[in-house]
Image (tube, rainbow, N blue to C red; front, side, top):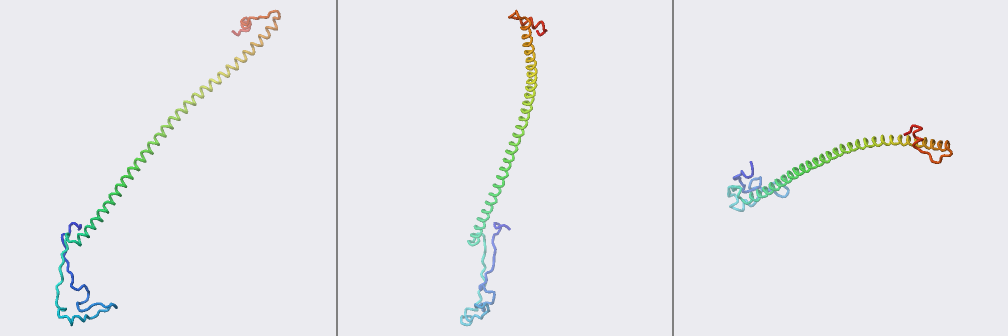
Amino acid sequence: MQPSEVSGIQYLVPSNPSPYSPHFSMNQSNKPALDSNQFLNPLYNFYIPPQINDISPHSSCISSNSTSDEADEQQLSLIIERKQRRMISNRESARRSRMRKQRHLDELWAQVVWLRNENHQLIDKLNHVSESHDRVLQENNQLKEEASELRQMLFGVRLGHPNSTSVNLDDVALEHGLS
């Protein structure tokens, strides 16, 4: 039953709140004692019927309690709503964080692929340059050998023709088959 469903409650209020008969009371040692006023007061034994109190949601006592309960319920629902909003916010934040992390990971993988491709291209260029370098070194060695042979021939020609100061190099090259 919800507090808003209560239309009213009736209850009895005893005229004497003591659990003992109206002629007895409790003294300080918690022992029942006979009330001597019953003999002195002629109206003491007069029966007073219990009062009937009606509790309705409109009564001030219940109204303040229900207002307090409603305030507590509102505060509780506000706390629950805040928790739910925080939970939703945390989930969204976690989702965004996972998306950022995934996007960063994808970018890193793309960078890895690009760097590997770049690395393969650089290795190919290096191999090509290295091969070219080797060819150039061989050609350079070959040209050095040819230059050395030509110097030796030139030196030999000068020695072989002491009277001739100018020797035609084309003629020397044709004699040796170097053209």
